[in-house]
Image (cartoon, rainbow, N blue to C red; front, top):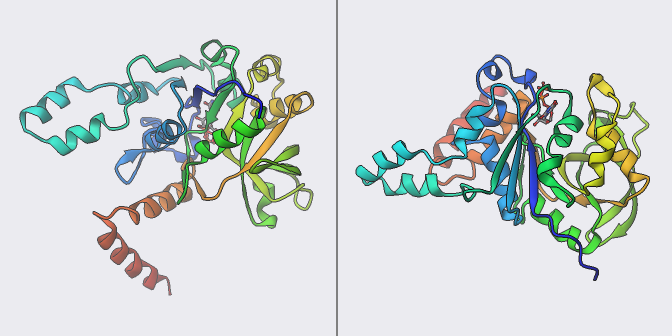
Length: 296
Ligand code: UTP
């Protein structure tokens, strides 16, 4: 099997305005809203850590400095916890913090779209393949994390990889949809990509769920990318151009994605992750069953 250049770095674009979550996002970035007791962004960074990512690149914007503080050591808090012998809390804080020197921040000065946010990371990524994780999408899986599965597929396929999941065919018009070609490793060749296809025209019911492995040539394309839907520089438009020259594989993620950038997805994520927690499951389950009964 051919050796493919290692995916060492991951980009987390956190510069969006989060208008679907106003008024909360007027003061708090949506990535810092909590699912049970962790900010959404921690779930996504944990997924990248599990996949072996070594360098974490955040593309931030105005009002997002709290994310930078979150991925830092809180000296005074740790000191107080130590003095009070709060060992469990100290372990929790030390937990999954990326190592010193492995986190970079760059700024997207204007929210011109996801494609533009990714392009803002070009100097830090350099000439190597990179992972891209949309930080408002969190994944739940009983086996391996979505990015870990993609890295495993990449070892076989190389090239670019887009994670996909199946939706009900009549819902395909809400998503970015891929065209499905021949099998490759644990995935398939992608033949096409369409952002929100008109009803009845989708090439499949496999939707793009917010996890990518991309080759650095995408930056050249994004540099001159014209504005597309919503007057924003769209990543899908850039990937479509890259698809003409480079292979894209689809990784069929076995699990559930929660769109925490939307209120309903965020609430469902809270319920789903709370039910996994032994400490709170009994009360959450009881309360939830009582609520469901009232629905009739
Ligand atoms: P979304 O469209 O879901 O995020 O972009 P948004 O614009 O923040 O949210 P709404 O639609 O107004 O509620 C997907 C991801 O891309 C990032 C967002 O932060 C989000 O994680 N993004 C989007 C940027 O970093 N910059 C942009 O210009 C646009």
